[in-house]
Image (cartoon, rainbow, N blue to C red; front, side, top):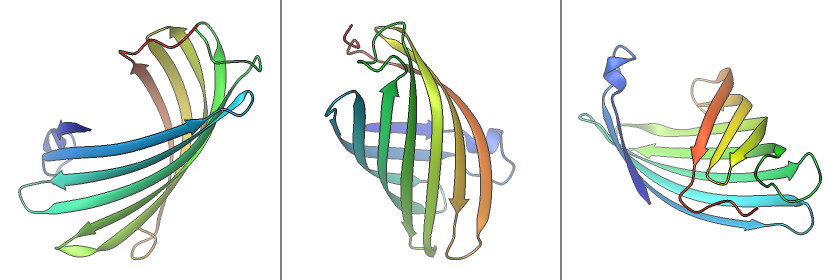
Amino acid sequence: MGFQYRFEENFVKGEETELRFTEEYTYSIQPKVTEFEFRLRAEQRITSSTTSHRLKYNIATSRSFKGGDIDSGYAYIFGGLETFFTLAKTSKPEYEQRIGAGVGWVLNNYIKLELIMEYRITNFTQNLSHELFLVSGMKFTLDPISS
């Protein structure tokens, strides 16, 4: 569970500031050296003009370049497929698909650095759009990564 307050209007003209609540369930398995993760997420996105509900399903896989566990100091490769469904009273339902692949490095037991190439097909039932992103991220964890 989580929440986020986004100051959209400061960065994109015409966008509204948003309050977002998130609920998530994640299940992962690692039969050998490849890990598979399944995630179901629900979001409520609240702006001054509307409230929308977004449901996401993500399936992802990751594997260390060395073939063992992804431990501190190791690099890994990963890929994922994410599907979105958004409902709002003021607009038609929207569907979106994201496909991504990237590399990551476990810097220490608490920090991961990732670089991802992501292809997005947005709003493909109304106004189809194709977008390609290069995403970088740093993930912090309170529960240390086993080493």
